[in-house]
Length: 333
Image (cartoon, rainbow, N blue to C red; front, top):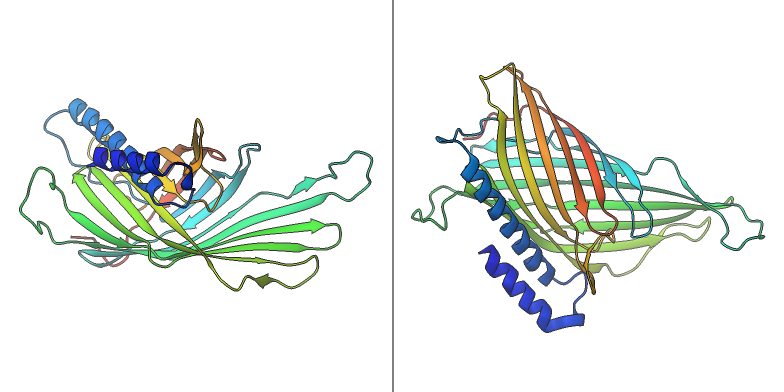
């Protein structure tokens, strides 16, 4: 299936040529196909080296409740990092329905100072500050299983997901004594996703949906004003995940579980992209990371560390430190 998606996307891309840009959906087909092919290969290798009988992962790695991150926010010319934080509690509404509210922020530490590019001209430096705020939720509904007769190609349960989100990117410029603000509001009202549990340890998730952008700015010292018509864009993601037990529960005082993540993000919002030869600006960045969860025997709270890299222009390595608390509303069925 992943090979078919990659081949179809590649044929469409070759047929359309330079008529595509970073917002076209064909890039998601190619990216999702590559993520699926990579995940299938890694999962096959992991399955071959796993001792039999395989022991299920009891403390499966998921998103932390609280986390702090050091994230890349650069360009093809300059590498910069920002400090980010997220709050993502899990609420179990029923044995088959979960809700994950979200709040996040990211801010560049300090301000950038740019002097006048022409030597000999005395002018105050241009100072710039950036920060980002996001909010929303994700609702997941696990379909009753099996909804169809079990077949080798459809071997695992499926979840339907809805993830409405809002993001604000704000840049404040200080040209001398005046202040100028540039704001970008991004709304994702109908980002729909499907998560397929390929095996008990492997999952493949795809998100697709429109994005609405409002751009606002101020003249130096003036009031903020927005354009009259929102801009429309396309957003898509593909994620493959593999659970890997390191120290199983009962073998020591601290159980350690890991997870391998391979993903693709198709969005021209941040200017991050994956360039390949003469193909510039069509594809979003790829991401690969590893999570490690540490839980002391009988403890309700666990610690989770993440390290990875975003591959593409403006990307780079990143690290996260998270705290996992029990889900609200009881356990899932």
